[in-house]
Each structure stands twice: as structure tokens, then as C-alpha cells.
Length: 508
Image (cartoon, rainbow, N blue to C red; front, side, top):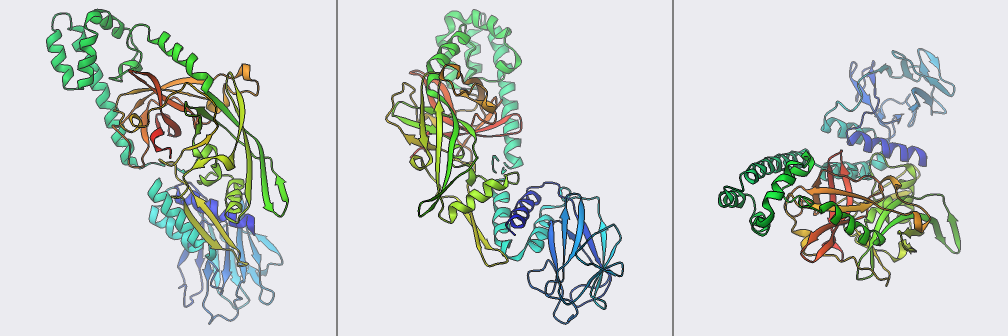
């Protein structure tokens, strides 16, 4: 039963998220009080029951006394669909022949519930759920989900509509955000092209150049005044830049020697960036009963100068971030935690110069905004999960008392400007991670801030995303007059271009 519950939950999430799930139809051939002849039902859930019971997905009224409470069940098994007789008193027939245990259905088969009962026709359809509208998908899942889990499906449907990917890791963003980001990116390109033309004329028209740049940013004006002495060298250098460098107005590395500067910053910061891997996952049921399971993941974390070891919350508590692609083990762990089972999780943290361990129980995080979804199975057992979103609460830290020279700026983290360039260190897909301290080396990448300040979810939007799975929890750095400082935590990505980071100012 637990496997069917989990399969129904994950299938419902996939349908609500727009995934393509195979479907078939049941055409009613006999007129009844609930189903007139010629009407049909589209079935998307992998297991449905037929009968007079209120939990049946295909339900008949009590006036049909030849139909049992739970008369028959239709279940998708791999690529096949089978019908099973559930009644001990009334037979289930296919094409006029009684079904002893189960029968593999073929397109056009006629199903009858008892000798004189209602008849239905099983029809295969080539249309899956991906082309259905949102309202139709929600109605199908709500009407066909096993009744005790309708509350859970409704909760998940609300999260899909409100949050948009689980998405993930867990959970997708609204298409309007993508449109705004694309428009901002196009504006940055137009501004950069204008800046390049003005710089080519700068030797003869420096004053005019200053006025033109003022329309873009007062910060650009101040920078150009300071760099007037070597403006000719900057013009030549800009002409050699590739398209990716030109696209950002506040591009990091336009000045001569920028690559050397990045290399210097990388060498200074990399020792504070740690490869995280789970070395122990133990379930504590209480009363001295424990169970160690083979379950783990890898991520990135970093140590700042006040002794906090900082990372993304989903790197510490990943089973809360469920989406349509989440493995059954994640859903199982989530429900166990709500039942009071304690988790003893130990994570190894390794940098190019140091190694130590942290534990889940010592982590500081904010789960007050998690949404609780619960229901009952056929046996009356309660199932409860808590769902987290990839938003401003995707942070966690562990106080360590260890030393670090990596500074952070909480105030600046919420006031970045579109076009600011940021540097990111981490272990994408586990690359650069190793159990040996001497072999560990984080990957360096750069991205562009896509909007001023924070987005509606409280995170910072990036374009030109250059990080992937495993980079989560890594530091996001920006150049300030006082040197490079950490201003964010890598959280999630969307497609190949868009990324999201949590402002380090969210840490409580």
C-alpha cells in the first residue's frame, strides 16, 4: 500500500507540473444514475478502483446492488494495463468471460461488473497529460486520487501554482520573470554597445562621453573620471574583449591585469570553500533503536570570518525540497521526520587546506514557512510531509569557532545592481572534490546580476549562469573598495542561463 501511495503522489505531482503521463478512457455503455450511456472518463492515475465505495475513482450509486463496494481495480504495470477482480461475491467480466485474478486489457475490451451489471469499454488514447490544460489536469488528479490523499494533492497543486521548480532539486519560476530577465539582458547589451562606441571617440570627445555615460549610471561616470589617464589603453583592451565580456556594463575584468587579479582572489579564497559529502545517515526511532541507511549527496559550503560554516539549506535538509522528480526515498524520509524519527546526519567538509565534520542537528536554519500536507491511507494511517521552497529561506549555517579571512557584507547583499559581475566558487557535479585535502580544488566561474535588488521570492536573479548541481551552497563574491566579500549563497538554476542566489543578509 505504501508503494501505491508514493506512486500516486509522485504521479499526481508530475501531472500537475505539466509532465507527460499516459492516459486511457473508460466509456460507459450502460446508463446508470451517475453515468449515462456514451459518457466517458479519462484515467491518468496508475491505480483506480471501481465500485460503490466512496473512495472509488469510478463510483456507482447504491441502487446497483450487483456492484460490490470495491468491485474491481485497474492498474498500470509498466507498459501494460491490467484489471483485477476485488469482489468475493460478484464477478468481473471482460468480453463476457469472468476474470479469475487479473486480465491484461487490450484496446476495445468490454468490461462488465457482474453478470447483469453495468458495462464499460476500455479505450487506449495516444494523448498524454502534457497537452491538457491546468484546470483539466487538476480536476483529473483530484477526482481520481485515492480519497485520503486528495488533501496532499491539493496542497502540492497549490505549491506548483504559487512557487512554479520543483520543481528539484524542488521545486519552477513564472514565465513573466523569464520575460523580464530577457528584456533586462537585451537592455544591458544595448548599453554595452553604446559604451563601446563612446569610448572609441573618447580621445576627442571625452566630455561628451561623460555625459552619455551619465544616462546609464553615476557609478560609471565616477569610474571613467578615475580611469581617464589610461582611457586609450581601455579602448584598445575593450576592442579585444569577446561578446560575453562586453554584455555587462559593470564587467569584472575589463581593466588590464584583471585575470591576474581573479587568480589572486581565487588563491586567497579557495581555502575557505569546502566540498561537502555525507559520510553517515542514521535513523533514530527512540528507545535505543537505530538504523543506518545508505543515502547521501554532495554540495558546497564556505567558512566566513565570524566562524560560521555557511551553505544552502537544501544541502543540509534536502528531503524537505520535494518536486515531481524526487525519489521515493526523499518522500519516505520526509514522512518519517514528521512522525518523530530523529536524523543523525554527519557531513565531511574538505577544503584545499583543511577538513572537519558538521552534523544536521547543529545546523541553524528557518523552516517556519514550510507547508505541511497530510492525509490518511486506506487503513486510516496518517501521512504528513513538509514542503520547502527554493526561496530566501534556502540558507543554513553551523557555528564552528574556526578562523577564516573571508569577509561578508549583509547590507550590500540586498542592494546589488543589474549588470554587477559576481564570482562564484564551488564543486559543480562533484568536480574538484576529493577525500584528500591536497587534491581538493573548487571551480571558479562568473555570472551577471539580472535585476536591481531582490526578486519577489527574496533571492537574487542571475544571468549567464556558470554553475550546476553540486555548486549549491557555494559563496558568491563581489569586488568592493575593501576587497572581495561574500554577498550570497548559490541556491538554484533554471535552464542553461538563469540562476538564483540567497542574499547572505538573510542569515539569522
